[in-house]
Length: 499
Image 1: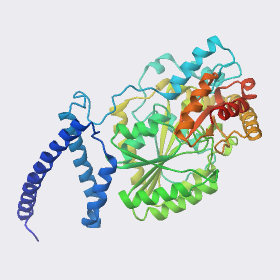
Image 2 (image 1 turned 60 degrees about the vertical axis):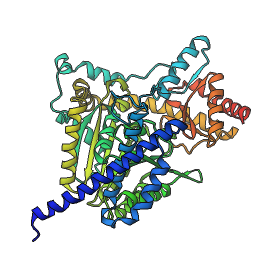
Image 3 (image 1 turned 90 degrees about the horizontal axis):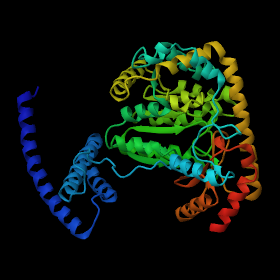
Image 4 (image 1 turned 90 degrees about the vertical axis):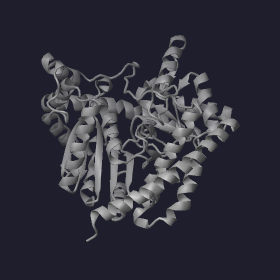
């Protein structure tokens, strides 16, 4: 057996060589910084970084390649940090790499503009923020929910929750709500979160190492990217449509590429009722995907983050969790985090209550992630809204039928609006992504210049929407039925004007 001291001496010698090479590298970086400043060249050059990795990765034995990639990524960060510090491009008070430019949320800003327009023009269409509203234009607040909330004692509302993980009865009620078809048969753990956003953030934070890549849909909620950036993660995208139909071929292709390059896959799937397109995969495609990921997991771990924010507003909401049976077939090297938005289900967006449900075949895997989630929660938000966790439990146990009746009425309203908009869109030729159900429909515009002109033109006609990377999202959930009539035709006429 080799003496540990001899091995340590060898490492010391190698470290001395590394120190010398590091200094030479940074001296060269200093010259690069001076050149870039003189010539107005940006510090950031992702294509150059990728070329360096691609060039040298084959020189490293395969088993060390993921670690070499991490090593090289850290060198890039140090190099850019020095260049930006030297050239006064960075704010010394803020962690390096953070985006400190002014943040403007597309949906909320568009909504503010729509409300201002409404004052001068009552016919303004506000298709921006994803809150479910009645035909009077005001937010829907279910009596069954707030009656239950009123029955929660004030001292319970004022107090901390029973634990960082949330109240036990709340977590159990959430699990039963998601497992309404009694089709989840593998170990699970539940952690309360501030909304569905908190659940997704927990997963993104804990499932990937710095500089690794998160897979998200090519057209998706923008906050996925923000979460990734906050934790020094990269983002790659997959296509969810093929020949204008829902498909998992793009997802499978990107997962295979990701496994080859980082030996681990973490993918966000916003399904059912995907934001912003209203697409839904369905159980058959989920089964096919899990089968594929099981095979892929022989090469490395695979984690699925399933964002189900709008699942309770699927057309067949009673069976909207049928696909979760597919999670029972996950291999030992797979797990899923199902991200539930209690606040969206109950149309109580400001209450900020959600839940992260961990599913894994191995009990140990579920327990480890559960413990990690609790530590992250403690350091991030500490406690979730105690009174509203109690409210959810009370509503489910004492007036579930009343809630389901109110929710069905709201769903019928949403279905009628979507029927009107989709039928008219088909008649007039307004190009939409395949919509099945949910709060939003999206006009498909692949050309970026046309997309920008079209969005601006819609605003000028007092039709306020949210622009995504390759489309215009229309929040049918918030547009009164009478304003849905003729809307698709108006939008098509405006599109014709700017083409």
